[in-house]
Amino acid sequence: MSIFKQDKEVKRMIFNVDSEIAERIEAIRDEARSYGKKLDVDTAVNKGLEKFLKKAEKKLEEMRHEAKGRRRHQPADIVPRPDAPPALPEEKALAEKTPSQPAVPTPGQVAAKVKDNPILGEPGKPEKQ
Image: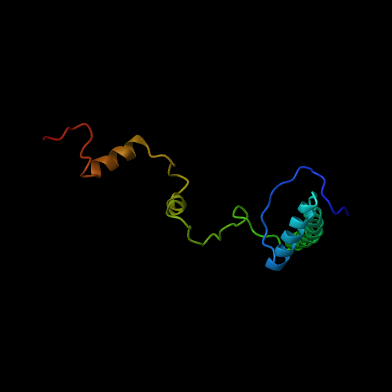
């Protein structure tokens, strides 16, 4: 492992580091700069993170494998029982309709509802003001 760093493409990330370790790194980095060198902390951090990532990826793969055995139910997979009430009011209205009732009201049904509605009054008759 090289002590001094070679420039290459990097992505800046922010991590929490123990304060004692951070102070020691800053002190030795400043000393290396006094000699005109850059301390290659990045490579050490990258190697440590790579080791961590391998362990994390292995553990997550095990968890995926276990989860595959006990597959989670997705909303589309859940089928309600025939006697279960609908969850939403719109579903209740749809569930109460019989196959003989059309999904869209006919003009006659609309006219009947308008006629029965005191606010709308009878269709075709303007109200006196």
